[in-house]
Image (tube, rainbow, N blue to C red):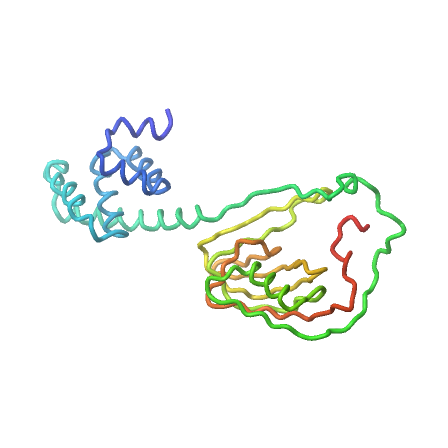
Length: 268
C-alpha cells in the first residue's frame, strides 16, 4: 500500500483535497505525518490550520475556523493551553520542513551525453600531429564592458551584445553581479563521449562572483562561479540564468587572433 492509498482511509475533507492539489510536495509531508501519529484527524487539523495560517493568513479564516470548531470534541477534555502548545510546536516543525522541501524541490540535476559531431572522433586515438601544448599570440583590439539589468537572461544578453559589437574572438576577463536563479553544467565522466551534469535552481538567489572564458567565432564559451550563504556553485554557463541586481561582464576583444580550435575536443 502506498502513501496515497493509506491516506485515503482517513477520508480527508474537501479542504485538504484542495490543499493537496495546490501544494503536492507539502501534502506528501502532511500525509506522512498524519499516518505516523495516532491522533490522525487531530494532526491533520493542526497541520492544515498551522500551515495555512503561517503562509496564507488572508482569505482562509472560514476554513480554519471550521477545523477549530471541532477541536474540543476531538481532544476530549484536553486543556486549551496544551492544545495551543502542541499547535505551536507543530507549526514550527512544519514550517521548517516545508520551506526546506520547497527549496530543495526547485533544484534539479540531470545528466546528458554530449557526443562529438562525428561520433567516430570520440573513439579515435590521439594524433601525434597535434602538439600537447601550443601558444597563440595577439593583442586586445579594445575592451567591451557588458551590463545586464534586473530580469535579463545572462547568456542571451551577452550573445546579443557580442553580435551588436561585432566580437568574433575574445577573452572573457571578469564578471560580477547577482542572479535570481541559476543553471550550470559540469563534466561528469572520464572517457569520451563526454557526459555533462546540468544543475539548475530557478528560484535560488546568488552572487555572481566571477566569470571567465572565450568568444570563439562569435560563440560564447564561459564558466562562472556563484555563491550563496551555504555553498559555492561553479560550472559552464547555461541558458537558465536570470539577473537579479545587475551583471557586469568584461570582454577583451581579439578579432585579429584565430581561436577556432582552442575548445575543440576532437583536436587531439
